[in-house]
Length: 357
Image 1 (cartoon, rainbow, N blue to C red):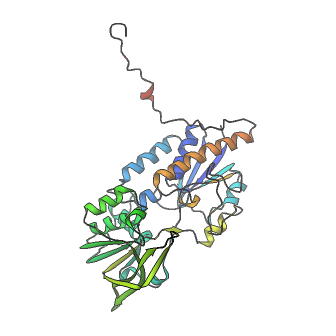
Image 2 (cartoon, rainbow, N blue to C red):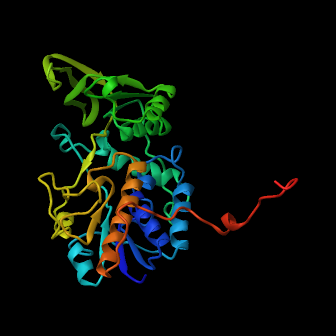
Image 3 (tube, rainbow, N blue to C red):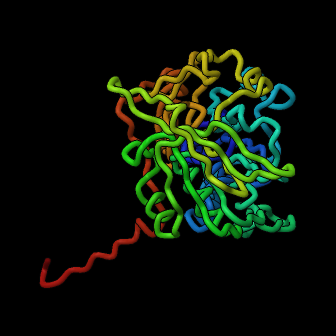
């Protein structure tokens, strides 16, 4: 099958999508990646001690062994690649898996910098990754880990927040607190993430919502919180009468990410977007308002973990296969029948016969 497709960004969803399409027999597959490395968030934001770079590189090597082309230094942007431009070039289908590149930043942190002791997870974790993942930057000089001292306060209760917490300890923090708005039963992180943080002596502070950053001599010295309470209807409110101040030297905000870059949003045209700025995606097919354009991973709004992003790519691959074969008048079964991992070793018959059995 010589039908051209393209993937944008070489993250988990895109790697998965391209892999399954290549296994289906598609031979004209191109993946565009903005960075000098591949793997997306799995490389740049999941620490080495949780996901070694070798594991990501191995998956990418399998991808290129199938004949998929990867072009680095290319990005979805009005200045470079656009959805409309790719389709106009003759690509029959496009899969977009660029993630959510911009951190959600509470207005109380406006103007704060790393020099003052403030990081977002999107700033902190990539610095940790570049310094601790051999081979990630290719031939570039490996930078040093961020130098953290004293008490670090991490804000958030997802996987990323706990990655920040355990990474902060490895960067020199004397003590790490993880503060979150709700209780332990509402933590979004997978259990093993929280357990690792607990084993490494991170302290948990539930029912706290950040209100104000305390500084002295242009350095962060603490944060004021209001206590949160759950109402009978399930909603959460802040009690201004109950406040507390936590002393700290560094604050890492891990309140998630979103898509706000007008340059990227413009490059998605003519795909229909929701009020949130994310594309309107069918969670069953990963298709969009444009029949030839599919999405997966964080930007699709359907995945919260790497595994779920990989599944998005797998789902999209079958949907793209049905769409592309439909262009040629070929009917494809509704139920997915994707080829599994296979090597020549699987064809070797190791069975033996003993007493006729």
